[in-house]
Length: 248
Image 1 (cartoon, rainbow, N blue to C red):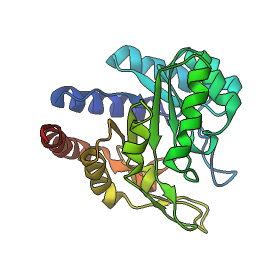
Image 2: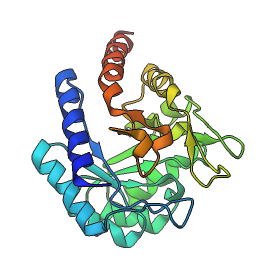
Image 3: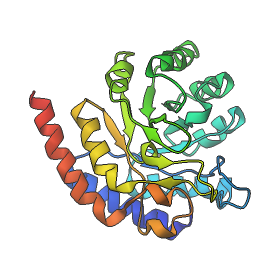
């Protein structure tokens, strides 16, 4: 969450696109960025202010909201404002966070750790089930490949779907290039369309795509974002592709 102007403009644009194309849409923004490379990196505008802004998006545009939590203590706080609690990839094995998220009764979206096999996500699913929550989504965001790159193993999508939960493909975090010497994570946004098309082709239930009116000015993850003005054309292509896939 950078500021109200960027948030509302982005939400309005994306809501309109998804309404026109009949795509179920969930708005995502982090009320705080807890995992930053450098100490001087932007982390947010304040938790309460950002969460209230997320609630304002939900009220104005009538869309469900998802945001990350970073500790067990944050689950109940965030749950007051959003519909889906997201467990970041680096925290997907943290039992206390999974239990706390489950007990809010909200939908819980767990991002697969870059360091985990798709099969290992069964344990995250089991922890949520055993904590009394069956509203579970898994999101693949690529796997670590060396020190500075990620790859998507598309076999993981049907593998995780076999666990009886919807599976989303994160098309932009999968293209991050972490651990740069500059201390700023890089990316390869020209491949977003390729990653997204492949995800739809192998049966992903949804796509997670970061966007911004001007990625060069984004305060987080700008290097792997798709410019907001390119979103509608991409969505049109993906809708047509999904229609074909659904006839096979």
